[in-house]
Length: 204
Image 1 (cartoon, rainbow, N blue to C red):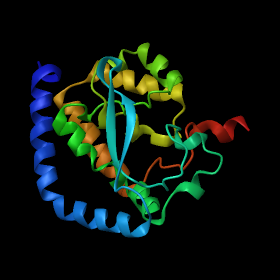
Image 2: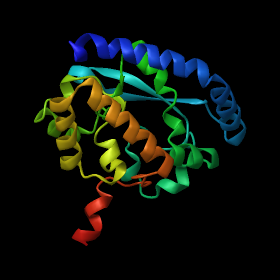
Image 3: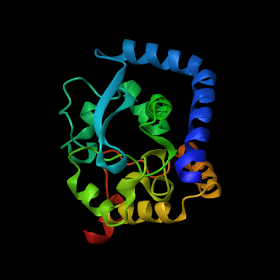
């Protein structure tokens, strides 16, 4: 009942309120991005949604327009060279994710759920299949994000996504939301160019 009906109503209402309250911040960030570098304000990228259907996620653009397309940041040879000045701040504070409020309103995403994989992140998609994590809507944040974020290896991330599927409830979503706010304020787990950074030092 909660996952199929109540959760969607809460997501819609909260994202609508957030959009209204944050509209001045949206305007300021739009102007800053436009003045900082050439290119569009918003960045669209093909991602994997519920039941492995595709949708286009929205973000504030944080990279220059000549950045290789559809490639995870951690696979770029030197990701720092592609990130704009405004983008560096937006990524560190996670403000680049704010336009996904529109994805939530549309119904492509939820506030809490597994972060949507890139369409070509086949290893992550396949690993999530083992835990049924591709069968629910992806989220703006999730259980994996507050337990490591960019630092997590794919196997660990998928397993945590599976834990979210098993424990999904209103109270668990509240716990994830509070954990997200705490992680964002502390910039926990943000590693430019890093997936699996948490254990990389142990392997070298």
